[in-house]
Length: 226
Image 1 (cartoon, helix red, strand yellow):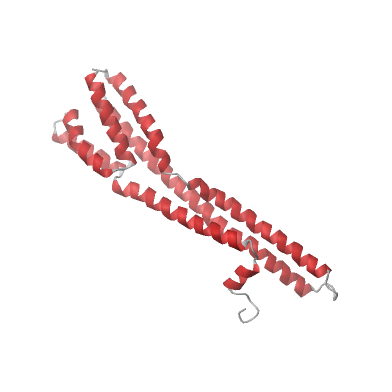
Image 2: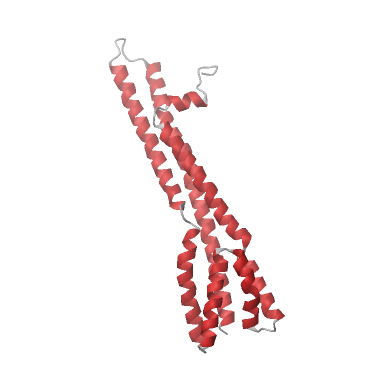
């Protein structure tokens, strides 16, 4: 205990009771998921930004005099090296474009064919961006409830001890017992609030990247199906 009777962090943790240990575990899981999602999402954006994909495609078309077959044949090895969600979707578009050309599909038929193939591939690839994010929202709710549960248990124990005290209830002891019981709620909120904020931020970041991917694929499909 520090000067003035204040508890330090370790003493506060211990004072919060056994519920502080699952809360601490939830905080570790939260940090692990956050780090993993940060790596996945930002590595995805860094390795192959949608704006770069458009530039590469446009440059290839310009180089080959708007010859679409030669252009996509040139960028195919580049896409294979990227290994991102966007590159995998674009490779699917290229594969289906060759099939459409062999079948002599009309521009309208080709656009519909490429769009359907893209949606199917996106349905498989895009969920990887926000995988595990839901756990952050769950951790936020659970941490809050565990903290409240610890406080309720602490309050019950505090009032029970006071009611059994031969010397009667003292205001300072009662206040101290309640303050210690509330440590569990504070601990839960310390985990819950950042977890919820991080969840919303990463969710919005992932959704923004998905929108960019969709816009990119639409532009590529429209160009190929002209």
